[in-house]
Length: 370
Image (tube, rainbow, N blue to C red; front, side, top):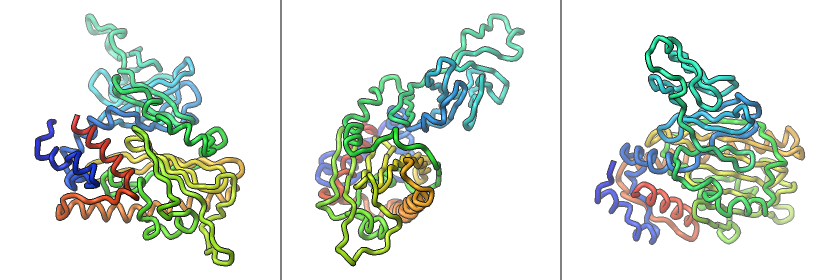
């Protein structure tokens, strides 16, 4: 699908450099959504899950990257491998969900593939002249890891994951985000009635925190001089210290933030993955925003904690994040309704506080327009 001149003019790069946002119709239009699936998600590294869920040969998980169903598994050599999860017979998905299989057998007509994607069985194929099993192999998908996280890419031309990550791993390590010191304890998913870009943009700024997140603002410093914003080519992040209250004036906190981690760390990786560390015991939270239409997003979260976190404290921190997430859901769904109205063609950012949104929107425009 080609973008017409009027659509591109609405996302004029010069206007965006001055602080004007993407057009409101980019958050509701079905054509823009289809372009994003093709030009953003099918050309970038997408989060699949955690290495811990793929321990043994035959362990597998399935997901979609843009319009493409994929399966990622541990093969018999002990390596991670990914394939387009589409049967070469009649295009059904070969496997669904997650679990363990010694072979990947299609649920439609029982064509079976080994853990290297090669066809090893097709019922009644011996009755067909010239049919050779060796002529069929599932299309490979690139798979790489970052710490405990598994990513996949359906594009053969995209740069390696390390290039997309850029300087981010070194910055996170310098802030004591130690993935080897935490283990996965909880996984949740929920639907949000908002475009995926609105969800990312909400993550990318804390201008709204003093107004909309009272518990968050009691734990972490949210003043503009303390909340540090930085970005690279395909990543951005914000860091902020633990809030220090005057003696005798500290309010009730959602959890005790004392511990080895003394600041909040909120990192974004293009186009839709984030990793968070709250002050307190060792903890890492990965949040992944999956588009399900122009006005619907599924938020996937994985919570990881170290041995220094008690079960009670873990519950309090998870509940704290769930409460903040519920506040964010109300905000982004409100924005979506405003976008849908069409009465404000585009917004105006305050770049001192919202420049990471500008960074993200510039990447969106660049990807969709090329």
